[in-house]
Length: 279
Length: 260
Image (cartoon, rainbow over all chains, first blue to last red; front, side):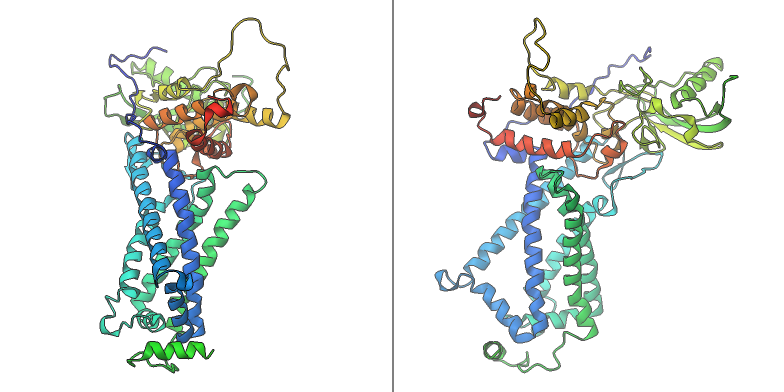
């Protein structure tokens, strides 16, 4: 078949190979290695999300037990280490994992964008004029790059809301999470925001928890059929647990009507601690 | 046409026309009557025949064996690599998959690593670069060694054969939203890494092939579109196998494993 073109054609590399960093950083330089980092940090972050959700279920035991749980996080490992030491270690680990997860996601997205740039790009994904007929890719896998930023923005809002107390102002009582949660989530727009963000989180985990097996090469016909179910169950449990908080605050199950220690009291924390001990 | 069992249908073919690598390119629409017994490429042949008669430039597309084993053909048909029929290369697709009056959009495989040469023909030589980086085994030439000299377990042979079924058409790259070549590369790595003959160069092969792949193609996000588009239904399991072996290759003390 004669190709009647005078122009020189040769596919050039889309990107040139860079000088490699010392081991083990050279693994992070490659896309396959970066997907490993994405998967491993993803596992850590899912672990946090599950622990966070399960811990927060203490809210259904009332203000005193919730306060006790919050305090116990600060006194992890008891008297062996200074108060709050383990908590801060965990926080630093989380920040590091979140940073790596985000950095690898953004750089890999650009990486794939470069590799598709001759095709029409819509929302970072290439598109054919014949209409993309997605067969295997599901809604969750195609929206990872949207649910991700939604979760990151929500995370900032959530910290400002219940850790730093920016929006509650004077009504924010450090050390009394039950009060703060019930105050914040009582507002309908805030409850909706929490619901939307947690649906995004569940979608993200629905694809991520399946995808990490592939990225890490954890693949064996003996358990491959369980991966989809595990991801669905994980996403489902997290979704139900996390959605229960805004929904039950709105329906009035989480409220402050019968509190023995009013949050407005100056000694509210001591009162809560005493009440928890009496349990 | 006395043995023709099919009916004749009229299809509207919207084809990507591009004069050369640096031409912008555009779609052109043609009407073509064709029997449903014809293959998709025969339909394009007929279309080219009438274009020739009218003094127009025929549409450039690639094909060779036309029996689904060489991997030369391959276009996007209505947004799907190799068209609507699963596990079928473009040349094995027949017009009976279409109805009278259908509009068929035909585009080249698209990826930055697959520059268009002309019309529907793209340069898939980056796939050759990946093979050059390690998709082979080193053997001494000379008399052929005895058959069955090296025992290969049946399961491993079967699995390696599944990977070796890859015809290198590039549909996986075209179908991938990220233009990643993971399915192709992992099939080529898998079929050697599963056999005893592939063990000597196992780690350097995986490392080099993955790194050349990443010079041209995107990053896998595990959508699974490649597997759906693959005319040979290569399994995603090979991608997982490659991901594992790549990081192992980085970590492994190869001298002590007796492998390179």
